[in-house]
Length: 236
Image (cartoon, rainbow, N blue to C red; front, side, top):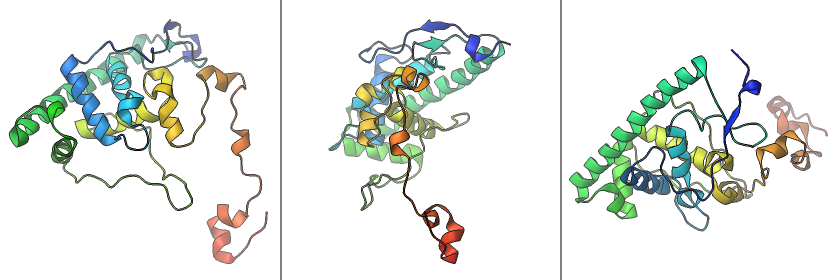
C-alpha cells in the first residue's frame, strides 16, 4: 500500500459557487439545507445556509472523491485498494442514513403540520427536529463576558451515528471546516469566531500562514497549571 503522499490529485477543490447536486436529489438538498439552517441559524452573523454547509454534506456523501484534500490545497486525492473499499462501505451506510432521515423529517412534518419539512416555518421545523432528536432545542451559543466563544467540537467520528447526530456533526464541519471541502463559503464560519485562517491549505505548508502572533507570551503559570492555583504558586 502506498502512502497518502503518493496518492494522485484527481479533482480540483470544490467550486464555492457550485450548485450542482452530486448525491442529493433537489428535494433532499433543500430539506437538508433547511435543517442545517436551524442547527446553525442566521442571526446577526451568517449561519449554515450562508456557509453552504449543505454543499459540503452533498460532496462528502457523494462517494470517495471528496474525502481527502491534498495538503497543498490543489484538489482531492484518489483513494484505491482497501482504504477506498472501506470508505465506500462507510459512505454507503451514511447515504442510507441521510435518505432515511429526510423521509422521517417529512413524515413527522406532515403528521404534525401538513406540509413537508422544507415548507414549514422556522419554529415548526424546530419542533420536528426536537422530535427526531428526542431532545429539546438547545439554548443559543453565546460568548462569555470577556468576548470569548465556548468550545465547539467540530470533528466527530460519524460511524454509527443517528441521522440527527450525523447531521449536527456534518453541519458543524461544513460551517467551520476548510473551504476546500465545499462549505464555509467565503470563510464566514471562521469570521464568526474571529479565526483568520489560511487563504488555502498551501499556505499552511509553505509558511505563508502562521499562528505565531497568537501565542501567549506573558502568562501566569498558575493560569495554565491547576495544581499551582491550588497551592498559590505563580510567576511568569
